[in-house]
Image 1: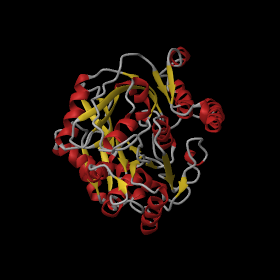
Image 2: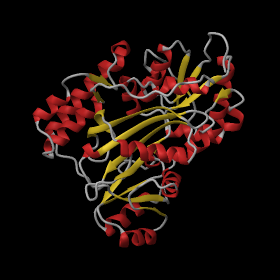
Image 3: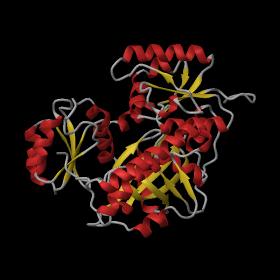
Image 4: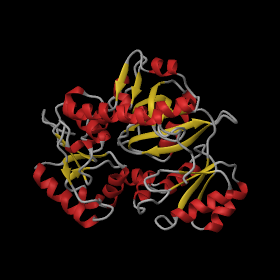
Length: 407
């Protein structure tokens, strides 16, 4: 428990917009908060809530990253709460938890968070604790791919343990920068594995959950050091980018007691502590919700929660520093949460696919709105958002409809 009125500083690990919004949340509460990242192009380096500090990439320079963290602790002059906003830093913090916890306040759940950040261990935990999920397998050879294909219902998807692993392919590689590959036949599955194997000799193969994008649910939560749920909210996806498989670009609050029960039950059963976003989707073939993925950190979808009265970052910070936090539930009230840069890509794709009309687009922007990437105090980023969105929308409307296939 902290004493007096001074609040310990906070460090957000990651300077993508998700991390910037974590900074905003804490700075509004009077917390001295900074962020860092290994990519100087991320928004935190230009944000009014920054600027971010540049660090080595822990995936490539592990020892140098740890040295950076220890130097940062000295600069801060006090033990700061360390809150990750990307899987890369969840993994790095967990790997160096022993030395870091002498200088930073870490979540006691960081090891389990790191396990959830890897798709292979995430799905093993889900399968072992009764979380409904699509047919899933770890593929380590072309023969594994053929075996999976014998029992799977196509189309299926292939993805790496960490999406950033496919950012390391050489230019012109069909999987460069992609989070998933869609395969429609056993032959395509084998080919996708062989393409991926150069960088990721082990991948995840999974049946696709069928149904409209609006069947997707985003469960947002925070569990305290004792494993109590102290915050939660849930949203329904209206559109996503890329079409059918990306994160939500427009979402709205929804009540879904079954999904809430499943997600809360899973996290309690594994003894989870910290922040977690779980994406689930109801399969149109049987109506059952199934796991898409879990994100054990600050997330883009989590930015919707504060507008429903659930400020996840602030709640999590208070628990980290030892404050007792009364459980917070979402307040009533309808609004739409919009990721404008991505929705500028999604709208043309949905229109061309015949999934929505112009009336649906206009309707989705009416009423109360909350934007992930528009904040006029952070005016540079907001102007950049408008410019990028305009270019993306025009390009999407005049270009060809995107294909599902990886090649």
